[in-house]
Image (cartoon, rainbow, N blue to C red):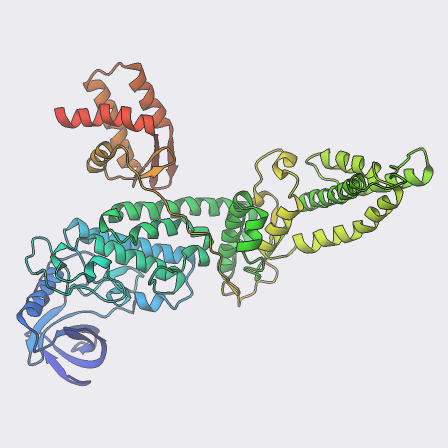
Length: 584
């Protein structure tokens, strides 16, 4: 078979243009039809054995019978001297192509969710693909996912698979697919493993292998929670992996939560004029994700962790500045720290002539004190007088020449604060802010939970048409933290999962039940009320449980999440749902 060869079917003639794919059992060619349309033709090798022929025919039969957007459209089929073949659309790109593209995190998530939906479609029909890899995932002109190559797929009720079959690709197969003489024991969890690899690779641009897998957080720290999902999908034991429904709901939940937060930040921080400028989209997205991530680091990480694990010059292509009130609060904090350091030094040094504090009856000392008071007033801030009061107290308690030394350092303190808290990379700003308040609780000063978005400004002045994302992206790896998935009330939760389209996951001391839509949640709520009425439940404890349970609901666009504590899980689900299952 070569370029220019003519292939005929009963209804059409095709001219081969270029070979675009090759596998163990056949090849794929780009071809031109009589009407000049460009298509793809998949050929089975002429010398293929009966097993390969049967699988090829099963693939053709499946594609012919399908109307799903996740499966290629069937166009034509035939057989010539080279063997069996069928014709399908030629898609503009495959998953492998997007691995080299500069995609936003949102685009990556959209592809991942689409791929999850495609896998879910197959699994709900009893089909296991068994060969998910970048070459077998197409992307059509509408940017939608289409699954290719069902050559080794298991179809519902099929008897083609034998124990000795070798049904796996090398880089993306699950561990159980590599075990000899157990091909017939491979379940849909093999596709789940491949899905985990593909998710990780799309973010890290590295094919995961071995135990030293690059983390998504290393590249996109805002989506660090995805690592806990892929950790589960890549477990060696297939029974420990999520099913596709649970994995997909978890990924959609993460996306919804972060998107909501980013939209709020966008409205608060980004000028409408900048929002309306499409050329600034990438810069705006990066800035919002930077701030979201920095907020989390400020709340959760110590100075030591920030210094040891994170590169302060990360994402230097956008500058961030604290507003004047917080810069002034920082300056006051540093002045207080400097005065306290001198006070502590004097208290720890024993000399023949002990240190004498400022004497405000003496004009020179009073002048020093008034000078410091004026400095605190110059850098006033609306949050708290405590820094000024304590700062002046320490300043008044030190000797005159130490007081002069402190005053001499003021210009340096102010310069340092302005240089390190204005138009700097986001992690640089966080580190400097954190170190400035290492001995003082910032939230106690501002009177509320600290949120960086309330006090930060984004400098877009240096962003031009050439902005193309991250110019510097070092590792940002956390220590790997495993998560336990313990289900104490599995019977109740399994019944709940069967009765409604939900996924469940352990959460603190209970469970998180994720509903894919508000409609599905309403069905659950109605069912609860029916059970209460049917069994004439009057037990105050049970009724209270139900009311308390329904109060712990989180609405995020299309996703509804219900939080159950351990007691509620037991009393409500067991008494209402299992009881109902037996009697209905």
